[in-house]
Amino acid sequence: MPTLSDLAVRHTALDDADLEWMHSLVSDWQLLADLSFADLILWIPLRDGNGWIAIAQMRPTTGPTVYHDDVVGTIIAKGERELIDTAWAERRICREGDPDWSSGVPVREETIPVRRADPGGSSSEPRYLGVIQRSTNLSSARTPSRLELTYLQSASDLAQMVAEGRFPFSGAEPILVRSPRVGDGLLRLDRAGRVTYASPNALSAYRRLGLTADLVGAELGRTTALLCYSDEPINENLMVVASGKEPRETEVEAGGTVVQLRAIPLVVGGGRIGALVLIRDVTELRRRERELMTKDATIREIHHRVKNNLQTVAALLRLQARRLRVPEGREALEEAVRRVGSIAIVHETLSHTPEEQVDFDDIADRVIAMASEVSAPEAQVVPHRVGSFGVLRSEIATPLAMVLTELLQNAVQHGLAHRPGRLQVKVCRSADRLDVIVSDDGAGLPEGFDLDASTSLGLQIVRTLVVGELSGRLSIEPREGGGTEVTVGIPFPPA
Image 1 (cartoon, helix red, strand yellow):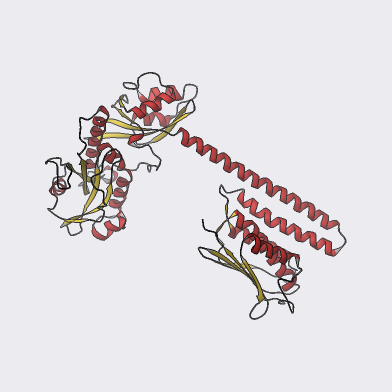
Image 2 (cartoon, rainbow, N blue to C red):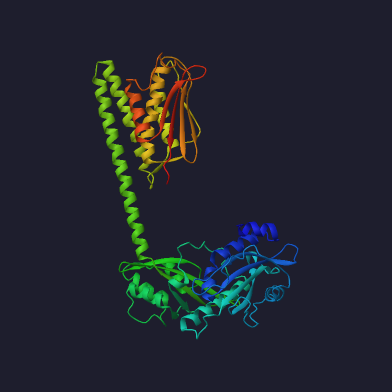
């Protein structure tokens, strides 16, 4: 389905600033739909001015929908829907007309012109961008409750703000996905910041904060501050939100309960008439977030300690190697140091990330640098990487780091021993597999080489890790033009 931007660019004359305003409106108009108990459709005039196109649609979560099918992308001719044309031509909200029964259920139609705020508050000609069609399903109509009357009055104020270019709020911070919604809890404030209406959910949230008195008639900022900041300095952001003077969000905590507040100032006819404050109890959400943060920190600390322990083991092996007078024994211990070091690199990387995944390119480059250090000075072997490993899970990264260490070390010490040459790590990654080719132009494989019969400890380690642990394949063949080419193929298990 084409996006709002796609439809606007293809069919309308909206510029970039207009599109930005539309995106801001659509990102927050669930509020208007829920308060209205109505579907919303955003109509924009076609570029030629002879019709309208629907570029966005929103259904209410507080009542039955009118449109079960999507209408985004629908084009209608001018004159086909009179209320849309009237709202556009007369720059006013249109509510006249009897309910429409054409769909089998009574539907009340209203239209709201969408005005963009004047840039910088200038007094230039106001710019109108489109019309919102508000359709209310009247099939379950009944005498409205106090809550429903408050919702509808608030929706009427918000609609007027849309028509005056005061909603969405120009320059306000983006609304978070987890911001409070109408159904979470709603307070209506007057100009002085006193509560004139509190929905049952909002009242329950304040009861959990410790409120024992009646919330209606109370000054929200002072009441909240007494509940949450009796023994510490008051959060200034709270007073701004609780007074409803600015469109902001904040959180308060008392007695183990965490409540999120979002203020929507109501500015109609050039004056502030009050505000809506949406309330959401996020106690359980914050508790789980803290648990996850603690778990992540614990895992990172474990990786950090494993890395430190491996580095200690490597240091002890290195110290022991220096004391040995037998060259073969010293060489074996030095190989063990490099193997332990490659595993330590993976754990060091994991200790800095909250997830059990690592960017393996950095690990590979450090392993490649280690291989360069063990080459003979006269050989001047400088390994290099072609392609990207990308992000790998730790259960793949750890054995793969060891495999890469062994293959590079084997190439430097045997294929390119005491001679200059070229050593390359080529990476090819697809959605379901990873292929790594380590090639050199050195002395090549010994005559009659058989991987299955090889007694090399390094190659046995590589084969065990690739075939046994990573369920991959390993092949070692002569390289065209001289040298050796080792191919490691690793399948990615399905997520």
